[in-house]
Each structure stands twice: as C-alpha cells, then as structure tokens.
Image 1 (tube, one colour):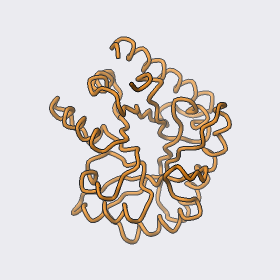
Image 2 (image 1 turned 90 degrees about the vertical axis):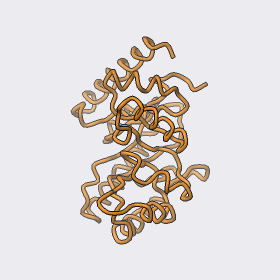
Image 3 (image 1 turned 30 degrees about the vertical axis):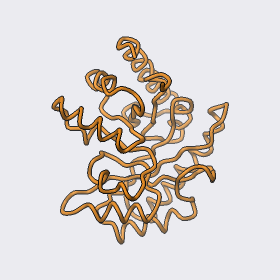
Length: 234
C-alpha cells in the first residue's frame, strides 16, 4: 500500500478508537489496537511500527514466523509485537509455544496439552480462550457451557499457560449494533470466570473493523482491526 495512505488510514482508526472510548465513558488507554496484518506486506507492518503501533495480529503460523524473522533482522524483538489470532493445529504447537505475546485462539485440551508439553522452566505463554459465542458450526471456539471446566483444566494441568481472558468472533451482521449482545455475553462469561478462578483475566479480545465501537462499549480491551488500516487483502 502507498505509505502515506497507510499512515492516514492508521491515524483515522486511532482517532475513531479514541472517540469510541470517550462515547462509552472509557479511558482510551484501556483499549489496545491490534493491527491485523495477515496477508499484508511486512514492510507495511514495519512502517506502522515506526509510527508507534506496537502490536500486530496474524492468523497463519508460517506467515507470522516469517514476518517475525524480518522484524528480528531489523533489530526488533518480534515476540512482544506479534499476537496469533487464527486457529492453531495442535501439531504446530512446537512452532508456536513461547513465540507470541498472546495467543487468542486456545480452544481445546489437545492444543493446551501440546503447548504445555513444549514449554518449560520459567517460560509462560499468555493465552485467551476462544469462545464460539454465536454457536456457529463453521467457527472454532469453545462452547460457553464448557468454559469453566476448560479453565479449571488449564489451571490444574497447564502451569505454563497464562490465561488472560477470552476472545470471540460474533456472527456477522449488516448492522454492527446487532453484534453488541454477543460482546456483552462474552464480558459476562469473563466476569463469571474471574470469580470462579480467582484470576484477573484482564483481556477481552473482541471487535473488528466493522463493529469495534460496539465491542468497546461492552468492555473490549483489545480490538482487532485490519481492513480499516491496511485496506482489502489482495
């Protein structure tokens, strides 16, 4: 993308996030912007990083690791910068464990066990549990009714996984406000899980380019925005 256009888009999104926070009575620094960079050039990511954007979301393991190598070649520690937001196959756990600032898509005991097996010592991998909030068959994520048992499993069997909260992909609507009840439900589930486990669970990863204002109004701590910044993927 044209570098000037990219930076203009980024500045516009930052302004819109600030306005959405103020409209919801929230402090702007309570919401982090995750720039979703999947299928976009690493050079654009580096330009945004230089402009002050600290974190990026990637869906595909191999693409993410290749971009991490480029960051490192520029003298930038990639781990604090990269979040993994796509579905992760358990067979790729060895490539993923300990490599990302946050994995948003933990959704099975099989994956949890595979990650735990590959972590050791003081290394801990921050994770979010992905919840299939709309109960959609085509989407990954844990059913809401299985959430507490899964969190308790992590606490008992996976000491190297640091549970930080929840993530969801709500059903897609023409009107973003229609997604708001699903965001509210994720917040309620996170609140209940906080009481159940005694964990802080500070993160709610929800909201994308089309509906992030509704997500912010319902308590999102991370909004995942790609198209509004980078434009359509080619």
